[in-house]
Image (cartoon, rainbow over all chains, first blue to last red; front, top):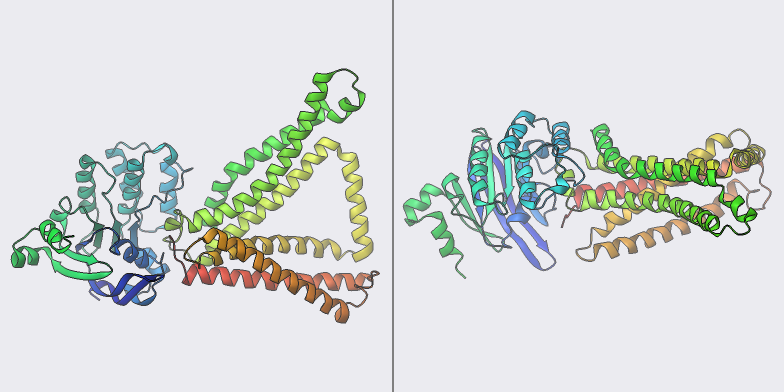
Amino acid sequence: MNNILECRNLTKTFGTLKALDNINLDIPRGKIIGLLGPNASGKTTFLKICNGLLTPSSGEITIGGYKPGIETKKIVSYLPEKTYLNDWMKVSDIISFFRDFYEDFNTDKAYDMLGKLGIRTNDRLKTMSKGTKEKVQLILVMSRESQLYLLDEPIGGVDPASRDYILDTILRNYNENATIIISTHIISDIEKILDEVIFIKQGNIVLNKTVDEIREENQKSVDSLFREVFRC
Amino acid sequence: MLAKLLKYEFKATSRTFIPLYIVLLVFAVINRIITPEKILISSNSFIIKDILAVVGITLYIGLILAVVVVTLIIMIQRFYKNLLGNEGYLMFTLPVQSWKLIASKVITSLTWSVLSFFITITSLVIVIGPKNIVSGIRDMLAFIQKSMGGAGFVILPIYGLLAVVSSILTVFTAIALGQLFSRHRVIASFGMYCAIYAVYQLLMLLYMLLVGNNIAPTFLKGTPSIWDLNLFSLLFILFECVRISINFVITNKILKNKLNLE
């Protein structure tokens, strides 16, 4: 089985609003994929459905052959756009939490990255700034040796200096068979690491190509194509 | 995995309960030492002592209330915030079955409810002195022995625990049902609680009449036999078991198949 993620006619409605409209996707293993779209285009909804946090209104999604559930949660590492950390925990507590629940969690890797970013493991999460919490969360997520990483706006709240380190971290910490889906609207920073891009607009996929194809066919960077496709 | 969930659930909740219990017991000891009620009776002009005594009693009663309120609030908060708020993004992406998440919340809430009860009793023993309490308990035990026989000492605690579990689960079910609404989820949960509560009260009444009229006929006449009282209690244990199962199944179905985190 070559695809890590497949969805067929996936639809999600909130009241009368169609957040995802009949989406069909095949996402192969071993790729870094940009899920790109303006605000409220359905990126977060899609990632939440992948993680079983939202129930699709209709259609089907499978990850590694399973519908979202225990089997997929074992192999998917998810960075939500929200801070989900328990405020009362210390960094070292949340690391043992991850170690306890995820078999693929690599503790040494996590401590190593925390050290490099100068985050003290005895600090309580409550005392940390939003940006630091985001870094901790990303480190936790990237310290798992998963088959699929779903990163929702991983660099949104982080300063540009840390951004490079984080992108570098992402690149260094996944194995070749794993796939990473990065959702973002800050494209220029991320373009250089992407293999493929998916443009999503009002719940519809409007483009699904490799970065090389875009450069050859359109003679443009992903960033300028994005600006063209999503011109207001 | 359930054991691991419980470990973190107790870690998260004991931070609040343990200090609260310690404060309550310490205050009980202080009240015992300054014996405010004696000061009030014997004092003629020691206004400061009077004030101290009143403050001591008031704080102590306030603390008992605090224990009750905190037990309730933590129960609701651990379910609502930890599972259905932002922390739910973590809890529901763990490779754990949803029923284990619910079970971990029920078991911790039950434990703290029982502990809160016994700590409050202990503090009363400290304040009032063991004599009155012990004789009160002795009277109660004698009454149970007389009306239900030895079986009462097994049946009543089991019934008590099951009643607590079913109350906890009713709250969880209401919160879970509230999540099915796309807006005003807190109000919806509250409304659901009232609805569920009303339905169960009605069912309980019907059940009581059914059992009273057909199975344990002396019960409703006011002079129940030992046998009828035990039978009646057992049938109510059955009622609570059914109620717990229904609540659990509904809550689990919603969290498993209908989850829609905001």
